[in-house]
Amino acid sequence: MPKTLEVLGAYDEKLIRKIPVTSKREMQKALSTARTLADRPSERIPIPQRIEILERTKAFVEKNYDRIVADAAAEGGKPLIDTRAEITRTINGIKVATESLSNLGGEEIPMGSNAASLNRMAFTIREPIGVVVAISAFNHPFNLAVHQIIPAVAVGCPVIIKPALNTPLSCLNLLEALYESGLPEKWARAVIVDDTLAEALATDRRVNYLTFIGSAKVGWHLRSRLAPGTRCALEHGGAAPVIVERDADIDDMLPLLAKGGFYHAGQVCVSVQRVFAQSSVVKKVAKGLKKLALETKVGDPMSEETHIGPLISPREVTRVHNWVKEALRKDGELLCGGRRIGKTCYEPTVILNPSQNCRLSREEIFGPVIAVYSYEGMDEAVELANSLPYSFQASVFTKNIDTALEAVKKLKAASVLVNDHSAFRVDWMPFRGAGHSGIGTGGIPYTMREMTHEKLMVIKSSAI
Image 1: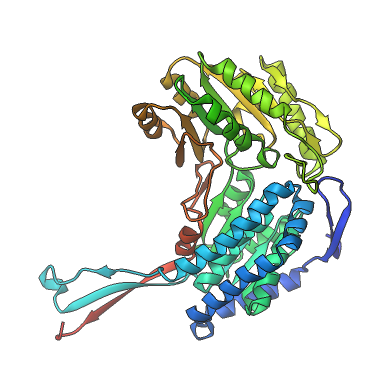
Image 2: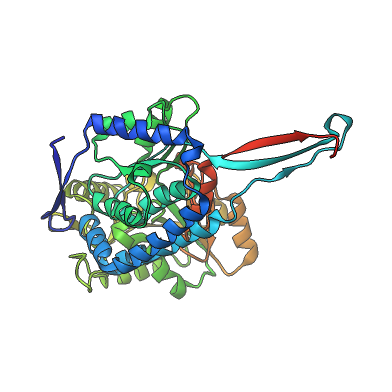
């Protein structure tokens, strides 16, 4: 890599800022410092001080809200309205971490139930797991950094983060907030490195925990290379299925599906992609999504009127377009969209009944494309929904509680949303992929637990 990285706007590809690239020597020094901190419990920042740092960090983000929003929208291409929602969400996420820290603890292990355990008491305490390495993604650059950095800081782990090279400014803004709030820089550092050095970072023997958000191909490869004893959480993508029964409230549902499928140009790991609609309502569902897609304004994310911004790169626009063309060759009916808008944007697209053998039906498109399929019975819909190796979030729309519970039971998903779109999330709920979609549990309180380990203490005394 060159000595500086040029951060370009996702929409217009204009230079936003140049930032220094991290050398291999600097990365190794950061690892050594982190390892030293993790090995010296006496240097751990006391919990009351950590809470104060997090509270001041939240206040810093609130004070610098407009600047943080502008950087995130420009580098990542998410429209202002949605970027504001992201940054507002992160403010609450930092608060969740602060509150969760006060409740993070161990448990008593019962003793005295047999002769061998008499005169003993036992309990567990939670300790920081050690050095955390985070590799982040571009699609929610500030919020993902919050989910990876803030839990580590909260529980007392030194953390090194490698942000996506398309969107490093948001990560740097979060670190600035932490530093200005009193966190010594040695406890949380960013490294701006290429994929080769990122792999060396993640697989270094000094690392205790890897949190990775990105492609399944890269994530599972890194997991196979981790040093012995390194724990990890991998958050990959899916091709989220939505089942729409004949009794669903279509008018209430359609805006949810459109938002879930077209939000951030579909660049969301649980984006609505495959909608299975019962044959009696499939045309109404497809035409309703078409109408909403045609009403959606695509363009400059810095405009207040924009609903959908660019994809992260022109290469991604080309890939999405190729997938759409394949779906149309394989029996799909184009209801709307299917065209590039300039170099960086793509029209919101709805395709009816493409073949189950095209990439749109088999893989995560990560673009503003929704496929609608017709089915007759629930078992057929569930079989199609479960036909892929992904297991993340899924949805079912129905007014019948028995039908809803049947879908929840049968769908191979880590989470099933009833009468809501598959991209719903709040930061205190568990959020995870299973199967090909990942390992480990996200959500700030759950990540904090994963970044600690339990130590058992057993006390023997005749006074017990």
